Image (cartoon, rainbow, N blue to C red; front, side, top):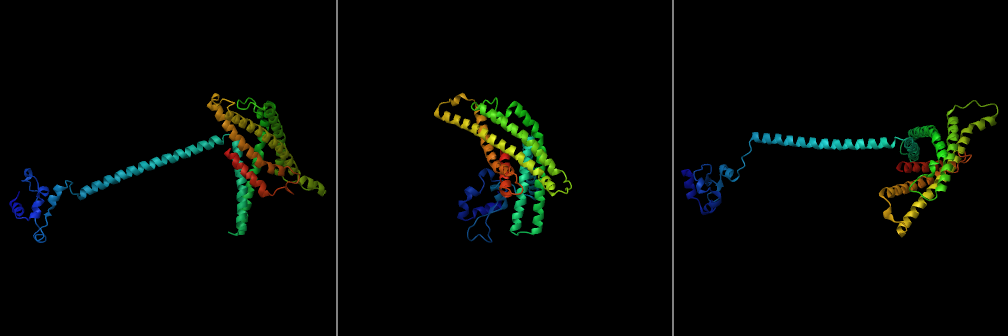
Length: 357
């Protein structure tokens, strides 16, 4: 230890000596001149405070002081680590989003792979366009915006709704061969079903009735569609002939809806029989009359799926019944039984249930 530091240490007050055990180096380090313990005579000699140099503090905290070069290196390392972390997190989120989009696209493509599901999508679009046109008119009545602008938007939406409706007329005509095949084979009667064992004869009769009703429905609806699409002929001198011709399409239309009404009644009866058989089986299992353990998991899952489908189909038939009955009347366009808001509103609800089913 340097002589000046030793003299200062020997002449220090008692408070400084009491800290020597902790603040001064051990005898092995007595020659280390990095530690200098002294009194600040200018400010602290009177109150006996002990002052430490930066070198002493360096020994107490072995962490080297940060230099500008070290701070720059640490900053660059931190920035690089944060950039790498942010890039990894961003890549992970982008991957998850991409996977989600791909999953949605695959689900959509699988669902829309059949003509039946395509018609269900068009049906929801059709009635949603009608609903949007009605909501715009409601906004017009509330006078929230310009009435002329809202009227134009409502007219455009209604035109789109009618165009999609006529497009569905054309696509439905393609289902006629399927109805003929079902009438010949009886495939709409649950033939060969392992889940349904009761009421097979009733199912067969109702299935054939459904098929034959569709055989009457598709051609008559197609004729109505063609008559609606063809340009009107010049009226003859007889006003009566012109009046009869003007409602020819509507006449074919209500006859097609009568065939459709017969289909709905037959399908409702069939669904009720299916529902009754499935519920009777559940009740018998609860009473212990049927051993539930004898059924495999696939049979149970098939029955549960069929029960869910049947409930939704009954709901759809109930929503369809009043609109179909309204369109089956001779004056459905001139003097309808129900207002358009009720008929089309029920049709929109059915389209939502149909897509969920």
